[in-house]
Image (cartoon, rainbow, N blue to C red):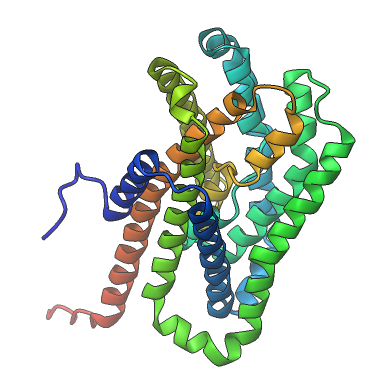
Length: 346
């Protein structure tokens, strides 16, 4: 039976249920450490399977796709900051300077890695290019985020010492949790690549399951720290509005730019998901260093709101992209299988 058009798909419903569960029954203490370990294991397993699935040729092509990487980099570190500064006169008086500093912090952050690649995979996009672009963005953010937030907020909190600490932690996390499992999967491809390709459904469940675990873990931690007691519902509504403006403007610009400049559908998917998303996993540790001595809880609240919104929107968008790709594949297969019509008799 076909789902009514006004209802969200199953994955969006699962995300909503995860948000509700983390808000009402947040995991904490020893259980939180177990969930965090499971989340890391799921992410590492996901990248291992992607490494085992992708051919060496596809990986090399993704690494060399400089036009795509330049587009994502420009959206992340140029377009977002411009939008943040442009919206400042309108929204800073409404939510206050501390919360708007958090909005500027969103604009200075690099892209996500795991969820960008997972959504690109769900949407049948260019996964190798997304992996390279998102990882490069995250590493570049180690240096660029402190510089951007210092320039936008006119603060001296982004010290060179803090940048150095972030550098080692972030680089080690990317290498150990993402890059090494992917390389291991590439090495194992000759033995298990065919099996992984025949069980694509397993990869889909890894994609979606890892995102749900990340959401539950991150939102549980925020709930335990008093997320819902720091600001009013009206202020939260304004933060949702600001996040929606940032997200939809950037997504719209990226879609139009991708289509006007001749990128393929698979490249467009990677550009949209890598260029419009911001990392919560790296953002919170960065904020604790960059804004030491300030109201860090309020400063990171906007990225928490933006993070949840981007996951909801991207989940729905990824499903739409996937349905279009499947319809195009089915149409192409039907056209190939249908014999040419006989010529009309004179």
